[in-house]
Amino acid sequence: MCIEVLGAPVMKKLHIRAASMADLDTFFKWANLPEIRENSFHPKLIEFDEHVKWFTEKINDEKTIILIGSYGNQLIGQVRFEEKNQATFEIDIHIDSEFKGQGYGKSILSNSIQFIQENFIGHFQVFAQIFVTNTASIKTFKSCGFIENSSFEINSIECIEMIYKT
Ligand SMILES: CC(C)(COP(=O)(O)OP(=O)(O)OC[C@H]1O[C@@H](n2cnc3c(N)ncnc32)[C@H](O)[C@@H]1OP(=O)(O)O)[C@@H](O)C(=O)NCCC(=O)NCCS
Image (cartoon, rainbow, N blue to C red; front, side, top):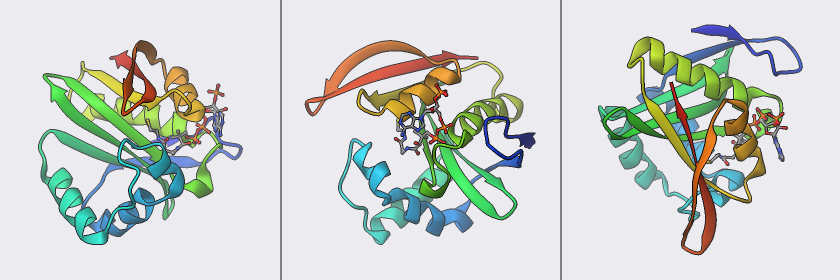
């Protein structure tokens, strides 16, 4: 799937595809980026062995879809959908540090939802659980049409849940 990145300063062709085991190292690099660990419910650094086990399970899990956004050879970021209930997916997104704040988050999120609709399931619900301090993430989800559904605390951290229905 190729689309124009309208939010980015320079018009580029964004490509969305399913991740594979060939992306193992890229995901390991991303997993331990400080801003990703800081905004995760499990902030501890991830060991390589632990990553291999986790990534292998996720790639082979029929309830998980991992997508990568790229242009040319450059991998920009990922969106992971995990089916928690019938046609209800929890979503996780991150953008490589080098490309943050340039419109890619919004573009990859909205186009990943479209990719799921076109390639997997037409009608579904997605939700994200986000720290209230994670302004960039909340704005990204709002821009893509997500609305706040509830607020709660996990390990004394204030969070909100945002949802979207196709
Ligand atoms: C959250 C994240 C995916 C956003 O992607 P991004 O490419 O940086 O965001 P965009 O450039 O598309 O901007 C999306 C919105 O966030 C805003 N934004 C971006 N960076 C911001 C920042 N540092 N502070 C405040 N707002 C910010 C933009 O202004 C834009 O808002 P708008 O729609 O009102 O114009 C990215 O910052 C990231 O990977 N963060 C670390 C991992 C993470 O927190 N994931 C979410 C877990 S729920």
